[in-house]
Length: 172
Image 1: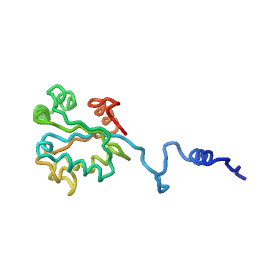
Image 2: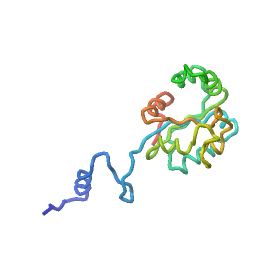
Image 3: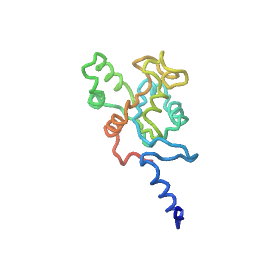
Image 4: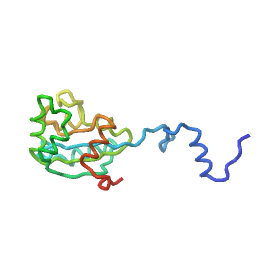
């Protein structure tokens, strides 16, 4: 016979101990993914057309919370360092030039499975291939001027967030 806990806290801790550590339940008692963060950049083509609010609404409607945001003008050194992984690719110089052509909005998005969810709401890099109602299908001008950047993995998200934000700038 199971011993009766003397407090609700004891009961909750006992229940939690029976589940694997990585597994938690949402408010409906269903398994949920761990909350994670991802970097989003609203690119110069979108800021030039004053689309920041509309793009933010798409993120928020998808359940992503904006926990840090700042509008900046990237320097050539910043853009070059951020996209250094593409340095040997033929489009690198054009990409850096585009990213410094106007202000960008840097954001940290937070939510369950944030990296994958952000990539889903952004849509395919080529707006012609992006599903309807994604950010790129709605707002991108071309494959180069595709309105948004998003981290492609949790590891890259952590590195990209550190590149642009101090931990003190991120408010849950």
